[in-house]
Image (cartoon, rainbow over all chains, first blue to last red; front, side, top):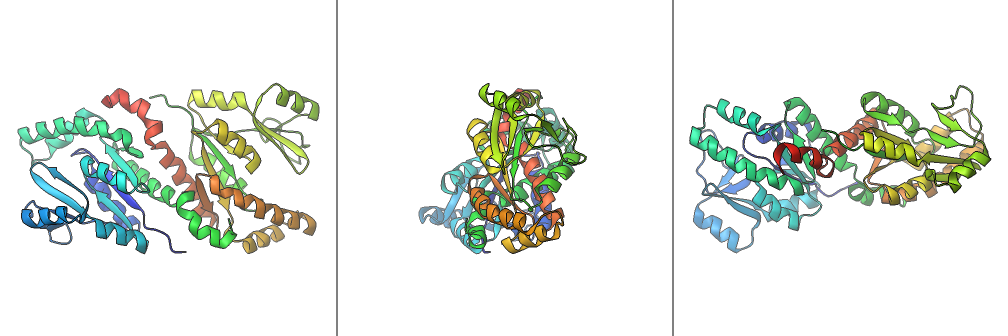
Length: 202
Length: 202
């Protein structure tokens, strides 16, 4: 029974644990792949072109925008990020599930175009805990942390229009919830009906 | 964070494994209870009034129908079955999740009244496998089996309007899927928002 690939879109304020959850969930579902975004930001140490991002210049990015090659794109902290429309369409028709780890601006654009997608928001258990987690990352300066906290307050307001909210208090519980969302979505009547109608003439 | 109890409505053709799945799932979720139906059918060996069913006479059942005490009721194979409206409302307001194991006629009535309920249909992997399972139950005569198979074909057509379909091929996988549906539904934004808005002013 060939079925359409499902698009999972995950957003979260910085420090909510989105990246770790996405990494773990990929290992659980063999049919699930991480969608690689295009970005104009320079690669960080250890990042690989084609695995972490497709690193492109601003000119190339602008050309892709103009030619409608992005399903969504957004500017975040002065850098541009975009998701290839062709990749989303191919995965869907080939029955491959995709997980997109993108910010709220991009997710909103997708929501309009990919209604059958599953939109998931990861929340920290509280703003205080978010601050504590960001403080514990030695990588960020106090100014960066303050900016991230302010951004978080704005981003969290966006959670309302997502389909699911996962509160990442304990990591293993949050992962279990994310996994459950993926399994449950695959049992949705709307996704199953095509294949089942052949078996049961329903 | 007090939340509303969730109503899970499960239907399936006889032999799909609904009863075993419902029994197991109750043990997994401490906040989940089985809703006890009213019925006019006589108790079978070992059945306990108030645990398996509330056994009532036809007159009492009719009175309850007339006074609007049922959220749903239906006649199945000449016996009447009904679910108390008061129980559903109380559980919802007390934050207790309820699982209702009822036939499609009853489920349809609930769907109109309890839109926030979760409607789950359990399917056998095929009609052939359903026949094999019913044959293996020594309890049923060939005529009863034939009637159940014919009923199943009609009931399966109802699966379309349920929210989720679980194909019970391997029991442990079906249980995992049912569990995932319950966990995922508890992460639905619409169910969480009331509690979360207090924490994050969203």
